[in-house]
Length: 609
Image (cartoon, rainbow, N blue to C red):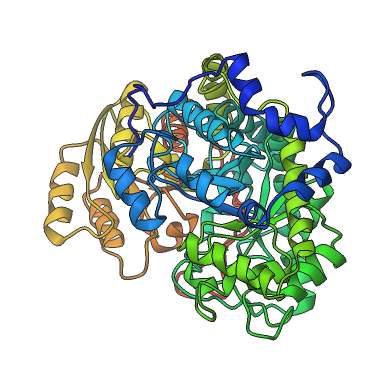
């Protein structure tokens, strides 16, 4: 999905001063801006901008939309076709001209994020296309760069451990450094809003959508780490986004495909779910993302939180005192579409208190629905103005009115530097968690066990990392002096695959088994048991959820890596080899497999050498 080739994008890589001045002439005139170093425009100037907008332009400012292609003006033909089919335009430039959207979200699958220089070109092309329109405004470009298992910009940008790994490290300074470095890299590529950190407190091991995307199960720890990341990102000039309000950590339903219900009482919500959002607000969070789920204790109407005025206005705005930007989670998700049609959702979201409408499945339908709601009096233009002013304030704070473009030199100086990559490795080394180490098998001796077989699950590599996980682990162990061979056995190995792995294990001195969400009846469990039965020492590495250890009582050594990205797998390999000591502590409890009411390993558990 990630093409590391550069090549022309059809955009100006770094617009000349003349181009910038021409493109921004309308905005600077409206703002009566001073010299280039002048302070950001104040509210009165922003209000003047709002007063000059047409109703159609106001509606557009509320939307953040996907668009296919690596270039704002000259995408590949397949991306033109996808844009025509889904949006009715050919390019990002045409999207801006037709709908005047206030934001654009980048995705790897939309081919927006091939490599850093191309991303910077795309960002510049988007800004130029928008600013050259009558009364043109800079665009707030966003993406989901959580790190760990969810990231849209891959190598050669720096990729950090995900939230639960950071939770295992437990270091606020590491969380702040992650945000500072990741934010600087995003900003260098023209991305000014990051949909991170996840502020959900994950207390449900069966949570199919949050899990390792959360810092953990302790609301105090999650609060501290979320606030630290916010400080890091926003210190680098990128808007952080705490998500998913009012909390998505205790559900066994994925809001992408269903409509979850959180059954917490109001008292429990205040103690468990609210603290990280309070902490993010206290840290000055620029934006908060809503959750497409129902919380009857907060609003018994049956509406998802995204469409709930009692939750977004009554609690978030009035009770918690938040006056920043509220952005919906994607409006294409089932959790927000199950009760109302796609034409009602954006109108109801605005009535609830939302400011940005993210990625509707049908932009034309949603855009016209909001326009009609204003013309027919269901929404007032003044209501739109309130949200538009919040969005413009954020754009102003981020420097988009003064400096909407980025330079290729900044990409070279900032993105994926040796210092940044080394920082990611150091942070990762503090996250790997050792849960079982019978007979002091680890660290694994190269002299006693020189030949290592790496088997296990090879899920699709996240975040544009190298992958597959078994190959990355074997490669890392090879660099550490072992003779390592990789054998992929998938997440559901067949009997024949297990037999092949067992035969290979007999020719090895030790086995490393990468596990991925092992369940009681999982063939992965049978694989590990049969590998242990060979008599070869087996080291199990949970490459997603740490709960795997409860299903693997026969494994003499178990580690939790919390993700299968390169940086976390390299750290696990260094721990196995004894190059670093395991320092991570469980940020979530692991229950017994035979009695889920009993805790096998509590929060804070972790062995070392």
